[in-house]
Image (cartoon, rainbow, N blue to C red):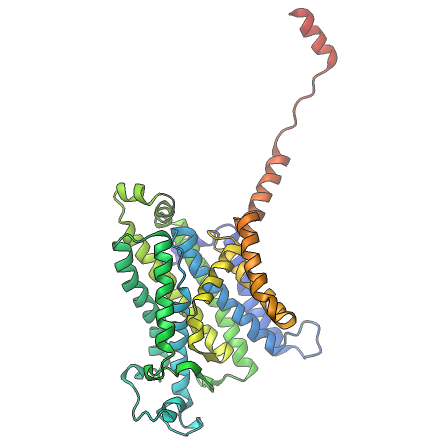
Length: 387
């Protein structure tokens, strides 16, 4: 039953994109580990980490597209779910340091020793086990989204009001995690990680494995999302997006539909955040910043919301541009980002993928339309005489 559900998502171009992501997830690590540095196809270590980060961003953009593109929920708080998943992974990685920290405490992380904490807080218990951390990576963002959505959707909060509330939520978490007494490292966050599952994070093989894990997670999330939107439930999603009051009148509990997809999207964002942390080596309250959530919206808009593949393209394309601009012209990047969003909104409202699909459809319609039959002048003269 589960396999049939997943195979339903492997239709059309989704199958090709999923296969390409899987191929990249295998080819890049093999190129990094098997080929010599002077080989033309060799992928350096920093590129593996950089593009691994891009894959986690693509997964976050895909999570947003599921609620925005197919359910009409413009969330400006998805960075909160991303950061919560990252903190869950960071807590596990901090517990793995043990006595190898600066202060040599086998239980307390360095920042707790520095702040004169005497014992480990109760909410840190269990994070020395990977299985517990893996559950928390999806459970904490999912629970927050469920509670938030339960009250918001039952109250029929929609449109710009819902967007503002989601942004207020992530800003409140930003302020909370900045405090030292929260027990999450305050302004500095969590860093100085040593290993994951017994493998040293600084080893190229570990980074390559993390890259492959990010590619696999993105591929699986794409297939699951495709299967959902192609199902009968997906049709209800589109009905909720396009005509919520009519769907409600027909008997559908649209608040339950919204709650399910919003919770699932938050769990996907949490997984993206968990994969992001060991790749970059740090997680701090800055990940909760509302500007980060707005940037995710830009990724989805640039790539083409409501397409699943478009936000992946948008996330990778925009972040490639960000890496180049922040290195060459760092003071102009925010202007470029804002200008890009305005340009896409005005000239390509369907995004890159949507515009390409429309252009391809027009070309096909022009090439497939039959040519008008030619009329001979003599035939016209004979018809005129007969009349």
